[in-house]
Amino acid sequence: MKFGVVVFPGSNCDQDMVDVLESLKVKHQVNVVKLWHKEHDLQNCDMVILPGGFSYGDYLRSGAIARFSPIMQEVIAFAGKGGLVMGVCNGFQILCEAGLLPGALLHNNSRKFICKNVYIKPVTDETYITSKLNTNKALKIPIAHGEGKFYAPDSEMKAIYDNGQILFKYCDALGNVTAESNPNGSIDNIAGITNKTKNVFGMMPHPERACDPYLANTDGRGIFDSILNSMALF
Image (cartoon, rainbow, N blue to C red):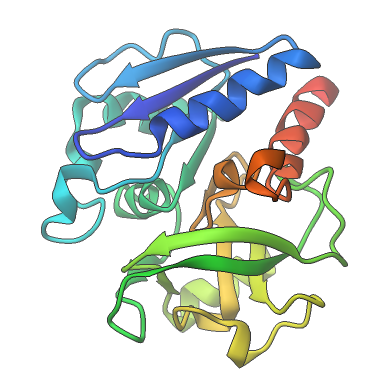
């Protein structure tokens, strides 16, 4: 499987993502390339990942300028044909700005940048990025954002629920979804969603920062294992 990690001016998690994907070579046939934002060639990648960071300095709104980078024309076309696309943190914001995912990411309720470990709970195991996850188990995954509050109007929320588009919700260590476990004020504790056709994925927490025993946390590894497991089935 070939992954492409898009690099925007201000991306700072691109190499982290590349390192994690390349570590999968131990068990799988994996190829990873970086895709510069000014290019128009996705290099025949099977999955495109928009990493975290502060694209274009997060001016205007986070992701609002990156959405117009040349490569996004190709990413939008690729997703429209059913290609797999994943956005993490700033990447999630870009996908929402580009209209590939519903809703928007607003300023945290605290109006402060939050960087800490949180817990999230998979809502489904029927998507490419959750197929190997236990929906009854909380995952400890770091967040690092100032605009991570997911919001969508009631009409969009109804469609999101009707179509089973929620991937993760913020929870406590025991998997309880509570107001206290919501770090940023996201509606219904939502931490990640997919599109209606289940080929575009966005999440605010950083699974690539929870994949190494040296960091004393490998809870994010299951998300990447899920992707490769799903690709093997289709």
